[in-house]
Amino acid sequence: MSDCVFCKIAAGELPSTKVYEDDNVLAFMDIAPIVKGHTLVIPKRHCDSLSDVPLDLLEKLIAISQRVMKAQMSELGADGVNIHQSNGAVAGQVVPHIHFHVVPRFAGDGHSWNWRSQSYDDLSEAQMLADRMAGGMSE
Image (cartoon, rainbow, N blue to C red; front, side, top):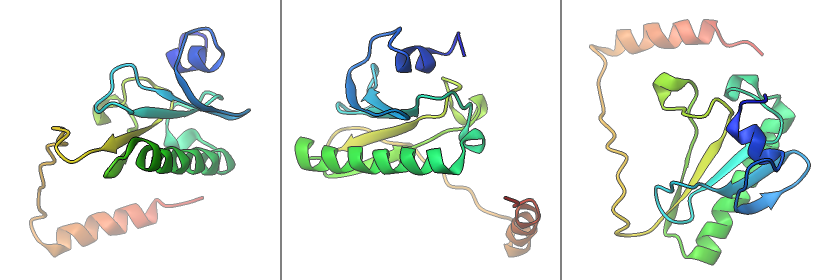
């Protein structure tokens, strides 16, 4: 897509600090890191969201995300790693081009996801939602 910032980065039209690159995948440093070392892993081919990515390309994205994670732990001394991926603006996806955030975590880094747990009214509500989703799972 001509107006997609990640497509422009993948095409070399915009600068990036590359961590990894091959014919299909690019990993580069996030310009506004949550924690220093925060890396984005994208396909060079434009796909809006996870549901648009062919499985063979998704496998490559996951494999490179795993390699970035291992490098963050071995080379940066990360104590842990968060891998985050959002789909749609309401879910927090700012750039509509699938990407994985690979965020190294260090004891005392000060970052918190501020996860707010909810609950179901009862187990039948959870079962009803599970049944609805199961009915919509097709390949």
